[in-house]
Picture 1 (cartoon, rainbow, N blue to C red):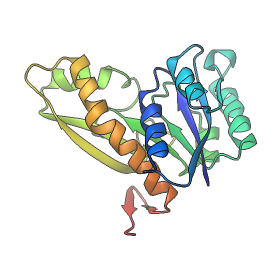
Picture 2 (cartoon, helix red, strand yellow):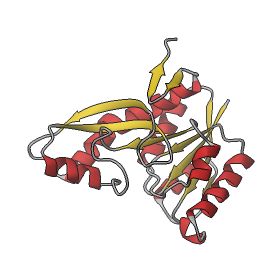
Picture 3 (cartoon, one colour):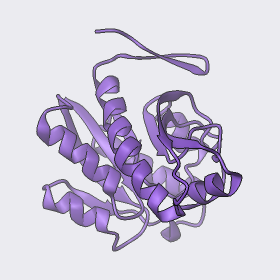
Length: 209
């Protein structure tokens, strides 16, 4: 059984997508053993509790440095023998100590087609605003392994979403979540759990069954 720890900072829609795919049997032999929020009172914690998943707030503001915050997260995840860390709308920066401890075992969902509209400061609604301002015709979402540099780790999966003439940042964000994020994040977890992801430099190869 693969033990998953999910990091959240908000409403938890991607967390819900993972829960739904586990409960439906699409993702097998996996269990979310902890949901950790960087902020108190977010709805993602309630989603976890509704599904009897242990949930806790380890607030970034309670630690004087990113390094010490990383150490607190390491202690929490190691105590539960977490195999895979999933960043599902987690808005705090992870320090090198945490990334190195879980090297090639942390995945993140980003609401754009990396390397477009990504990196420091590109989170939440911002990638969608920037995509519309730039006038691109296609955007989407990317699941990637996490490295020390923001949004720079090897790409696992991407899915494109076409932009409509009347899109606003809000309508585009909703469609990217529904058409891309909620599909490829659970798929990446499934592939990881089946041992089908092979990292070769910057490339992630998906092995056939």
